[in-house]
Length: 257
Image (cartoon, rainbow, N blue to C red; front, side, top):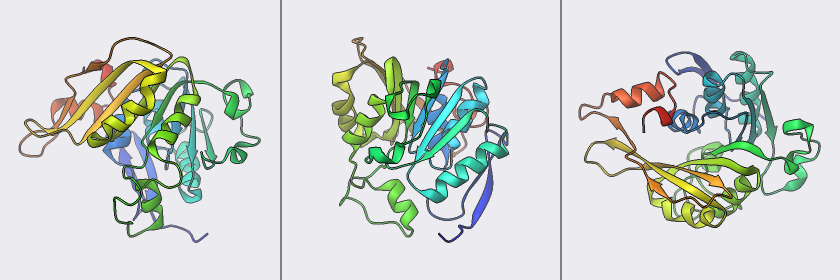
C-alpha cells in the first residue's frame, strides 16, 4: 500500500496531536463531540475509529479508562496506533484492523479481561458511522473518504446492531450522525435500549440541527428524552462558550446539558 501524505493536527487546544491524512477522510469536531458523550466508564469501544481521535480524546479526560478501536482501512488503523503512541496512550489503547461484517477478521483479537473480542461487552460503545446511504451520495475524490462517508455492504441498521452486540447489559451506546438519519437510528436501537437521549447539535441559534448525538442504555426501559442540545456557533461564526468548553476544553456533555 502506498504511503499516505499526512498532517499533524492539534485537538483539545493542542493537548493532543493527531496524525491524519492530508486529503480524504479527516477527523474534526464530530470526533471531539462524540468523545464528550462518554463519562464515568472503564472500557470503551470506538467502532469505525478512523485515526483514533474520538477515543484518544476520551482517554485525555478519563486517563484510567481502557480503549479499543475498530477500523476497516489499514492506513487509518496504522495512524491510530501511531497516534496512541504519540499521545502517551499506548498502554490504554488497542486498535484492531477488521471489517465488522466479517467475523473472521477478529480471530485472535482480545477484549476486556483478555476474552475473545466478539465475546466481550464494553461499558460504553461510541461510533460515527458512514453518513450517507449507498446510492444517495456521490463518491468522494478519494477511496478512503468514500469508505468513511458512504455505507458499503453494512448499512446503518447492521452497523448499530454490531455496536449493540458489543455493549454490555446496562452499558451505554453513543452515536453521532446526521439529524435526518435520526429515525433510522431510533428504529435500529429502540427494541434493545431505553433511556434514549437525543442531543441536537445546532450550527447556530434559530438554525435547524444538522447533527445529533443519540445515547442509549442497553436493556433499559426508561423513557426517551430530547435535550436542549448544544449551539455550536454565534451568529458571527465564532464558537459559543459551550462549544469552546467541549472542543477546546474537553468537557463532558453531561456537564453542559
